[in-house]
Length: 415
Image 1 (cartoon, rainbow, N blue to C red):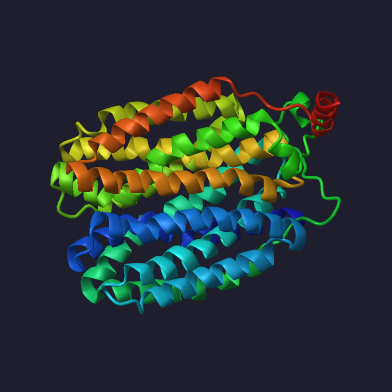
Image 2: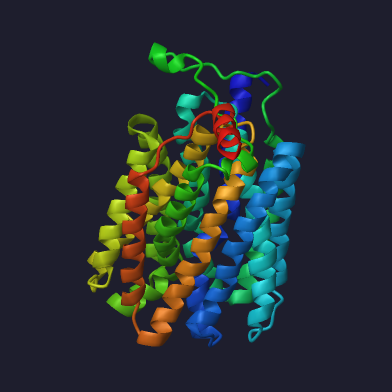
C-alpha cells in the first residue's frame, strides 16, 4: 500500500472506529428510558454516564502513555473489545441495579472508549502535514460525535421494541463485529517518515518550524498547561451537560414527546463543529477559535432557560453542538502545537483529565439542579459563569517556549 493510500486508510478506519464506540452521545435516550421505564431518579440515571466519562478520561491518560510505547493498534483493539463486552455485560444487569450498570457501563465501557479514542487521532495526525492538524483532528473526533446521528434513533427504536437490556445486547454485539476488524488498519508511520507539504501551502508555512517536543513532565511545569486544563474543564462542562440531558430538557422545557431527533441533530452539529472548528483553527489560530466557541456557548447558556418552544430548543441544540464540537478538535491540535507530536499521546492524555472532571461535574450539576429546583435553570447559569472565566483565561494563553528553553529557565529559577 502506498504512503498516500495508507494515510487515508488510517484516517478513515480511525474515524469509523470512533463512529462505532460513540454510544455515550446517545446516553440521553437511554437515560430517559431508565427514568420512565425502570423508575430511576435523574441522579441515578446519570451515574453510569458520569462514571463512564471520568473513567474514560483516566483510561485515555493510561492509553496515551501506552501507545507512545507499544503503538496504537494493540491499545485500540483492547479498547474496542472492552466497549463491546462492557455493553454485553450491561445488558445482563437487573433493573434495580444502579451499581451494576455503573460498573459495567461506566467502568468497562468507559475504559474501552478511553483506550480507543486516545489512539485514533494521534495515529492519524502523524501521517499528515502539520498544516492539517486541525482538520485531521476534527475529522477523527468528528466521527465520535457523529455516532449519535444513528445511535440515538437506533437506541430509541431498539428500546421501544425490545427494552433497554436487549438494546444494549444488540449494540454491544455490533461494536465487536464492526469495530474489531477496523483496528487492524491502524498504525503509526514508519520511522523517519516526514509528511509532504500540500502543494498550495505558502512557502513560509511549508518550512520546518521550531519543534516544541515536551514530555508530559515538562508540559505540566508550564503555566500554559494549567490555563488549558481549566479552560477545558469550564468550557466543555456545558456541552457535556446538554449531551447527557437533552432528551429530558426537551421534554421538560418544550413538552417535546419524542426528542430522539434532537439528539441526532446535536450529533450532526457536534461533528460539524469538530471538523469546521479544526479547519477554522488552521486558518485563524487555535486560541481565536477557542474564544469564539466559548463566547457562543456562554450566550447560549444564558438564554437556554428561555427556550420554551421546539424551534428555540432546536436553535439551542445547534449552537451547543457546534460550540462544543469545535472545542473537541481545537484542544487536541493545540496540545500538538504547544507540546509537539513526539509525546502527544501522553501529553493529551494528561490534559484530557480536564474533560473527565467536566464530564462528571456538568451532568451531576444538571441532575442536582432538576432534582432540587425542578428545572435546569441554575445549571445553565453556573455553566455561563464558567465559560466567562474560560474566556478570560483564553485571552491570557500563549504558546510556551521550546522545551529546551523552558528547561533552561526552570534551572535558572531553581539555582
